[in-house]
Length: 306
Image 1 (cartoon, rainbow, N blue to C red):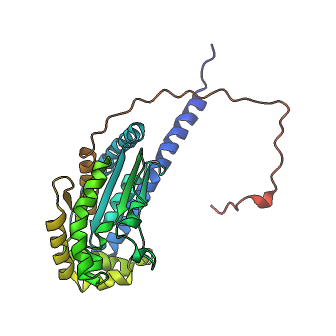
Image 2: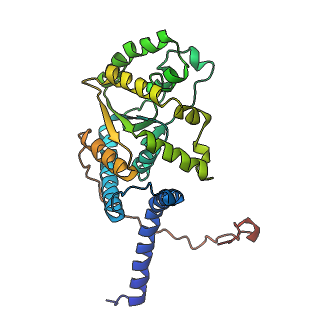
Image 3: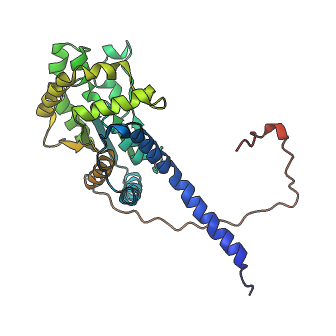
């Protein structure tokens, strides 16, 4: 029996550590991006204390581990899950969606973020273009804004008539009951921020060239219509907070707490169980003595700039 070479053992351990660290880099990059934005306005003294970084990362990784179990259960049981994320512009919907999908299989968990309807879609049944994105068995769909556009931006900006608006409130309860009867698990979140917080986040986007693309003319217009959006939200919740498809309000002023709270709550809304996986054994590497790898021309390689 041969004794393992200590150097090779250390090398293997370092490789494992590097691989694990590399897997965490995406979240670290997003976190550094948040911190960079905060520093831009740090001079104003408007920053409020947030959740401890170590606690945030520890809890986020733990919750993402549970999301993987949820994904496995959804796939194994052929369940259909729909999660709606609504809220004002810059409320943090995209941030929590990124953290949910970050470690999941995009073939199982996907995001539906529909653009404004085209001319043809405006003549369709209102819910028709959303139906096309609903999940099949074994899928999770996260709607980054949803059919509730009619109760929000379309109402406030005058993109729908009064009759269309009132018809929406008559139709949406039955539409959602149909989805639930079909076997879809439906969860609805409203991300709530204050007037001051939205002003702060919009200012950040104006100042930061990496975020300016997020600030659309519609977002800018929404600032002057804060109260109109508030009234539209209150009417929407009054008509569509239903026993079988209730709204859940996420306090989203603190982005880190909002992400953790939303993911933790989502996990409680679905009765998933851990799926036992069969152990994986890699087959032996087959080597053909007659095979010789052909040369690769140097000009085909990407230049090693870094």
